[in-house]
Structures are given as structure tokens and as C-alpha cells.
Amino acid sequence: MKRLIACFSLLLVVMAFFFNVQTSEARADRSKPKEGDLINVLAVIDTAYFTNFSNPSTDPDNPTTCYNPYNPADHCSSWRHHVFLVANDPRGIYSSSADTPDDNYQGTARLNLIANVNDRVSFQGTSASLNSKDTAIVYGITPYRGDVFDPFTIQPFTQTNAVALTNPIEIVKNGDKTLNITKSTQHFAPLVATVKQKGTELYWIDFAVYKLADDDRTQNLYGYFRWEPDITVQ
Image (tube, rainbow, N blue to C red; front, side, top):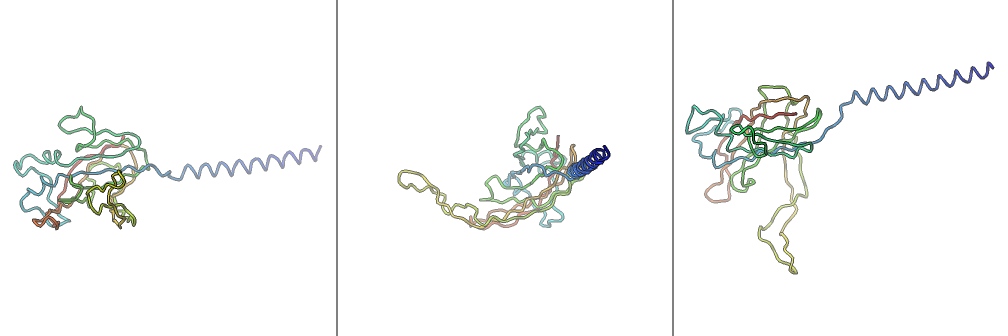
């Protein structure tokens, strides 16, 4: 009987040990932040509008802030028709225009993301010509109201075998159309932040515009601009 009791006691000790180990691991797993999904946001910038500005800032630390050059009293609203936000949120997305809040669609100035805590948002910009004529580059995101994201930081990376067109003309081979492409090294510099809670955060988004010169080959800095969209995380 004593041996049976001793064996039973030993079994209880072993079971308690494994229970404590599993409980500790479970607590450790809960304490570790889980990496979320990546949400890509692209700002498509109408550079033709911004290259009509006279004497824009050429200081990246003091960009021209949003205003209507044709009506200085109209602060920022006109810019909403010349910067368009699109995203690939895997959980769903809608975007509402400031002028028509009942319309829910992408490609407006007010972006609404469906995201979880620890999801990451990657933000980049381009011109409407995909930087083939004038170029637009987003280089800074600074919050001034709200507390939804961790700070946006530039996280550059390089694709060493990215596809690029060597000639935009389609080439016909054996009756099939193919594109004359090559592989090249391309560099990217998205601004990335992690969602830390749901809510609305207002930002200054800084971007540079480079205008195509008369030789149709050279892109020169035209100015630095600062725009004010708002991003909501549900």
C-alpha cells in the first residue's frame, strides 16, 4: 500500500510539473506579440496639379503645406481631389470622400482600414504616370492627432532581379505576344508602422515632386509638399 501511495504521489508530482511547464509556455505565447498582416497603401499623386504651384518649397524639412493656390482661404480641401489612396487590406477596406461621406470606395483622400493590433501598414507614393513622366515620392509621415500607429519609419529594400521593360513595344514570336523585359536592380523605400490600437489618426504626409524637363528625359526636383489625409483603423 505504501508503495502504491508513493507511486501515486510521484505521478501527481510529474503531472503537476508538466502542467506548470505547459502553463508557462502558454503564458509566454500570450505575452509575445503576434506578427500581423501587411497592408500596403499607395498614394497616387496628381503631379500636374502640384507643378502648377509657384515657388514651392525646396527644403524637405519645411515643405509647402496644403492650400488652394487659387483660393488661399480654402485650406486643404482642393488637395483631396489630387491625391488618391488605395490599399490591399486583406481584411477589407473602404474609403470615403470628404465631400460625399456616404460613398465608400478606394481612390479617395480618406482611408478606412480594417486591421488588428500588430498588423503592419506600408506606405508608398507614385505619380499618376507611375513616375514615368513626373515623379512623386513619399518621404515622411508625421502624426499630429491620434495614437493608432507606432512611428512610421523608412524600411528600404532592394529587388536584385526585378522585372523591367527594355522596350514597351510588344514583340510577336511564333504568333504569341511577349513583352521585351529584362531583370534589373530596383530600390524601394516604404514607410512602415505597426498598428497598436484602433481609432483615427491624422497625419502630415510629406512628398517630393520631380518634374520632367523639356528634353523628355530628365526629372528635376520641383518641390516638397505636405498633405493632411486621415486614416481610420477599425
